[in-house]
Length: 62
Image (cartoon, rainbow, N blue to C red; front, side):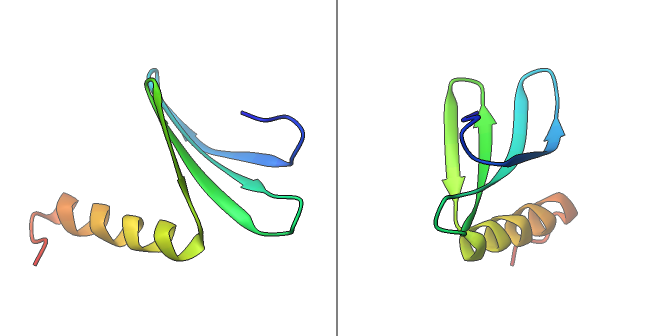
């Protein structure tokens, strides 16, 4: 994680971490560190991913 911008850890396991940062331009960016891969999401993308995970966890993605 970049310590130059404010960050808030949303959740962490042994191998993964989700966190949000407030960028210098004031925009929030959500990050998923999945092992050696980090994905970055703007608000709309993060909300869509959350909906997808909720649907998938219920087993009815349609």
